[in-house]
Length: 556
Image (cartoon, rainbow, N blue to C red):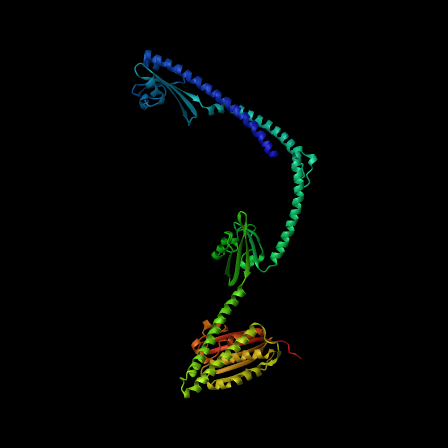
């Protein structure tokens, strides 16, 4: 306020003086020009009379001083000029003052020169023979007139500015002093202008109310921040234009983005087209959802508009990690499809044979063979169901915790003895090497792991091949290695062999038998025991499966 008052007084003082001086100078300049034009006309008439009486002799014998005299013929040609050679000058018939003199007897014109900043006054008088006498003189312009008084003008302006400055400083300080002394936090009504009393009273009441509101807002913000930061889900609150009003750390973490700055656009967190479309739908007043895949993870985005009287006032966005749920849903669909397919095949065979038997179209000598097929397909279904039950128990961690000390070498020997008849049918050599390693765990799960690995080594081996089982011990781990000389596994299938129902060669697998769940049971069984399994294979030469289980201190 002090600055405004000071500048106003100073500018008004200087402007008033400057305008007064400029006005006076302009009036004087105008009066001088009018006088000069009249004087020039009188001199022009006198010169014209002299030429009428004596002709060119008058012009040649007369000194005209600062006046420029030009004699122009009736055709516009210059006959005489005091400043230039007439023969070098162009026609003057189109000059304003000459043209006017030809038509009405006399004429005048004023021309301004930008180069020398002077005004040229011109007067023309027509003679009796039709020729024209023109006289010209230079008249200083308003700018030159103003320049001539520039020094005194600047002195007057400086004096006015100084007086305005002193007055402005004094007046402005006196005016604003009571206002500047007001304590806005605790305004004193008695120490200020009476006109400010209503304002100060309201200000005092508002200060108290604002203090209470600020404290409540601070507490609410702390509570909101505490709640949102403890959430594993992401939460974003944005304005109607998409500017972020609040964003917890879970949102930026789930979207794989840096924490946004205050007021930043929500699209700085994710600029993908599906995310933009979801947010724009919410800003348009429509609730929107999508599953956004980022870096191998699935995030569910739920964007809801917040509407008021004037329309959408903002949006609320929830972000939920649904990676595990999506994976489980995918596994569930695949599992359902595979189980349906695996059960449909033996059931179709059983139904077809039983239908033939029921209709009596089977020969007596074929009944035994068809009965064997029914028994084989039924056994296949039972094996599939048993494998599914075993896998479900491992998935749900519902296998009874009947841990005991198991000699892995002895257990492997028992498994190989059960597979001896199948191995002999393919002329396979079964061997067991290594040492007696004790492991404390569930014997049933261990038996299924070794049994499935060895059973696959026998099934997918070549006639006359070999299966070797080795039991060894490394620091803190027990190792079971099952190797065969079978057909091997292509590199492209090696990462998928532990998936449920996955078969490398489907036609050959169905011919050999099995449910397609053996290696899945191995993987989940090893995981149940806290270990790890890996496979190595060279197509045409065989495969090696290695299981490593963490050993625990022996029970005394």
